[in-house]
Length: 260
Image (cartoon, rainbow, N blue to C red; front, side, top):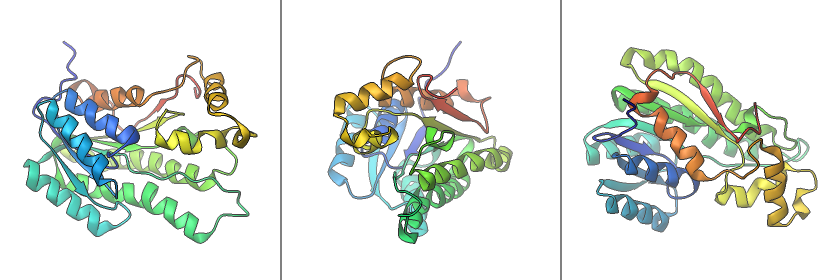
């Protein structure tokens, strides 16, 4: 029988106070998991997600930590284990996006993107290895940009491509604890990041109305609709469930057919 129940499991989702991360946290809770919410600065939003999870009858706590800071990452995991008694699932959802022509990118821009999207995710994985129970699950956040050609997007695309390489190697490292390691690579998904950056994916998009941005996105999809956070969270829920236990070292593209 199919088993995507997460009853009795404990999950930590980084970057989960809003956007796709918050929907992933709620999805896991709806399937029975207790969930640790991580936020950088949006304490009010994080507490709202905690309240929504508790309303589902699950345990939840919000912990502030900056995944660009290794000491913060260590503290995040230690506090999560102290609050919850252990961890079965880690979803590394924190990230920043950036657009800039090669002639405009500064060392500070480069370092900011890679410190969170790449370095941060790597050291989240390191703590996940230390703290996850045997048979656990780790899911990274990549992006369709790692596989596509998008102008002015080199450092973001590169930061995510590195994550996909991490997944293939770390799946081997985590195997001794029977922990699966995978990544998801969403395309345009309606979220706060979508509202801020989606128009930059299309030539002349800076002048598009919001409706024109949506239509340009739809035109890329085989399924002819925009994506929603639930489209991503359901795939994550499968990967971290018992049914996802034979999927390992993979990057799953979630794009409605925009990338095949």
